[in-house]
Image (cartoon, rainbow, N blue to C red):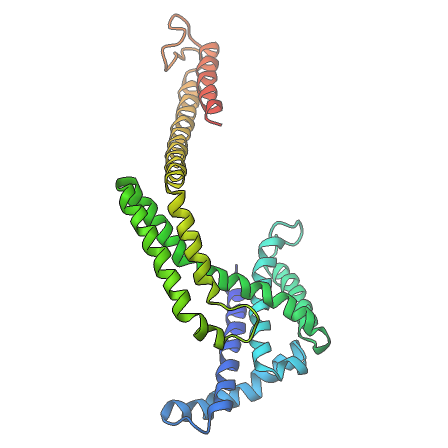
Length: 290
């Protein structure tokens, strides 16, 4: 992206931060104190009231701009849309050749979408778009620690299968204990029907299942690592063969008539026919790697 386009996106993100900051000041001005609060009330709040809020009302709509939480979320959605649309329009003829046309198209489509989502009559669509993103974030945050632990146990299992099984037992017991000790507390904090503490129980069951299928998992993990090493080896070999092809071209171009095989093929002959045989040999090696 151009620096000017990145600057505009940066200003959008900054407006999000300032709007959230201003919202926090409005809600907590009575209880806060100190130099930071004074600066915030004297500088950030007037800046938000006189600059960001009117711009938000103009771009997104008054109803949404009045709700700082929705404004925050919609601006972030807009930044995501502009970024994704930028990458898409870059591949479109007549648009991708001009950065400013790319930005205008991306920004306009994103803004139209955000204005639609921001309207109070389309609150259902706003929640429809918002919930999958929230679910994705929650899923990733919950599963990342378990993924890290999974690969750690797999690496341990290569050297000590018994220790790996013990680690799966510990994981299963610990998460089961977390579920039993925190299910009521976390359930009381949840307003929905699903108790988030059930995630602990799910992880405990999955850990026990991994203990049961530990041998299969380790075979699967070893196979993946072997295939990765083979693929990386093929990659290095392709690079080497492509370099040989380039070298052959240079050698042949320098003296086509007296060209001799670089691989000992057709030792009694010279010229173009020998060059073709060398090329054929290297191309067969490349084909065997696909």
